[in-house]
Amino acid sequence: MTPADTIQILRSSLNSALKGKASVVDQVLICLLSGGHVLLEDMPGLGKTTLAKALADTIGGTFARIQCTPDLLPSDITGFSIFDPESRSFSFQPGPVFSDIVLVDEINRATPRTQSALLEAMAEGQVTVDNVRRNLSPIFFVIATQNPIDHHGTFALPEAQLDRFAMKLSIGYPDRQNEVLMLRDQPSTKLPRHQLQVSVSDLIALRSHTESVIVTPAICEYIVDLCRATRTKEQIRLGVSPRGMLTWKAAAQAHAVLDDRKFVTPDDVQAVMFDVFNVRLQGTYANLHDVVARLEHEIPVPIESQ
Image 1: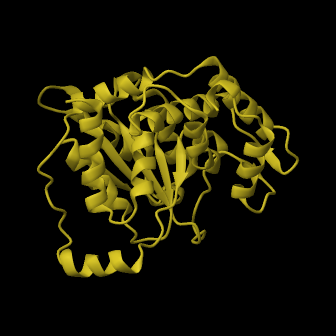
Image 2: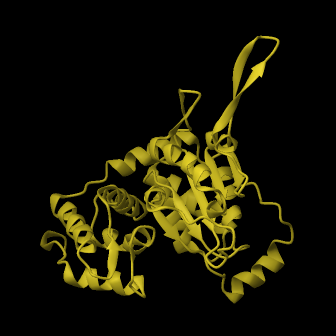
Image 3: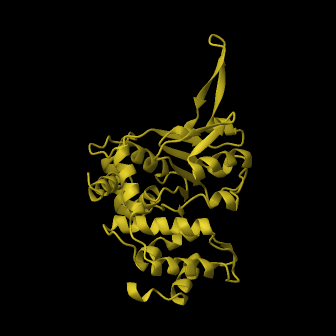
């Protein structure tokens, strides 16, 4: 299966599950292809769980949902060892992070100790339990959610954990036409089984293809200049880190793959700029769109790419 075929199936499947949100679907796929994770900050009932389940269904992978509450323990996420009296030995019971696609619902309702259990998993693709390192799925992908208006009994994610996410997205309400279609065409809450699927090996190959997309020195300098500019603005308290810069580059490569290109252009860099910034920049600015527009105007686009 070619990369274009794989992307077509993924897009078709997710767009049929989350109607009228093609741009959100593409940004989620960018996170998936670049090996990152995504934070969905939005109101309840807009399709976050539907999107995660449809993705797991399309790749034929395993799916797990973690409903975060203040009493959730780190071992509830990573797993734990149980003593077997018959064999007189401990056996490891894997937690939900050992699934391919993991939905972490209302992540900011978990305590900081439990939130930190996700750090190693998201950054390294492994967990350490009882001093034993255990590898996660090669396509391990986290979709975390949080409610932007409900702050009672929540624990804000620290900057170190936010930087583990590739993007922060908002699904938003569907338009009137798609809401009517939901009532007419989807009376059941059960998700349809998609006939066309991509395998885990197809997705691994697609990620490898994404990594091979050409990023010229001029594009690299363009990304660096944009990142460095975020660290000198008065209204920005915390700019893009070097790790965020690498994530941005990978996201730009994934955007090029979605456009069926083997090289990154400034348009790719700018297309993912807002959502990459959205999960990282901290400051006193009123509108992030204005910050992005100002940076795009101030930092010259590479001449060879114009």
